[in-house]
Image (cartoon, rainbow, N blue to C red; front, side):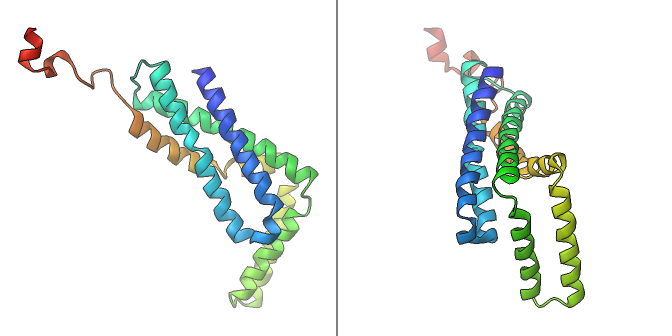
Length: 186
């Protein structure tokens, strides 16, 4: 189980880190709103490896059978490893190469509130919220925890769907009682 989880978790995490790195190179051109859509789309693509990891475990370790609980456990552990890779990549990028990310994102969010026609009080509230967020992001532990929560819901959904699709009980499938009588007699 460990080998399957590590292989698929690391590949998925590597994909998410690569997608994030490439997207952040072009964030000024694509914008934060499209970047968010592309980011979550890339997470879904990377988390397809949860499905393949559970299927690999079922076929290679489980002899073609896997319960929902075991499938869920394999999937969620792949998600955790992948998410940790995502967090490590973000921490390296944020603290070494993108120190201005919080400022750019704050400016974007304040402008979004302004363009929506909100009053001065709402704009000031958003400015204060962004200042608080920036202060929190400067703490590597909070930054890591916040970043870990980004891919987790996507991975959880992919795990649930994959575990439901791939589960096969020991009693399911064709047994001797399902074989027609003419074949059983031979």
